[in-house]
Length: 146
Image 1: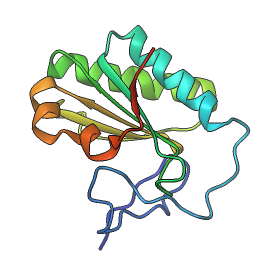
Image 2 (image 1 turned 90 degrees about the horizontal axis):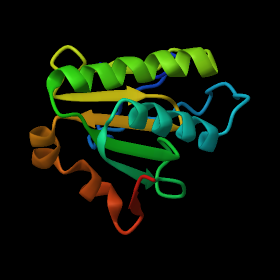
Image 3 (image 1 turned 180 degrees about the horizontal axis):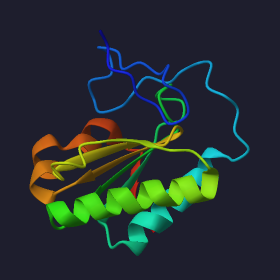
Image 4 (image 1 turned 90 degrees about the vertical axis):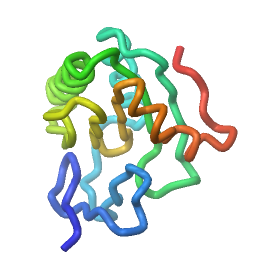
């Protein structure tokens, strides 16, 4: 049975085709009163406030039905990775009134946060170097965060 994942609905299904760290988008996801760009701005501000390192934004519009943006960043330790992730999910709930789904916080090596139109990956540097996730998706569209 496929894993279920999603910030607003438990009906989002991870398919075998999305093995690149991205959950499948639910076509019936409810409409929101904020844009993907507004969501992205809050995400970037939160992770930068928590001193995330090497923040990379990847524009997925037109390239994926999963999300509009992907953020990849690093924390210096498992504790910082977990803290960045926890504070981000709290900020999203406070600002947009939804609970983002989070996987991997227990180990603190790689945390995946599904915020709907923005997917966030928070890595320890060694784990990020091993998986090189942004290189898979970059293909000329990644740029370093401001």
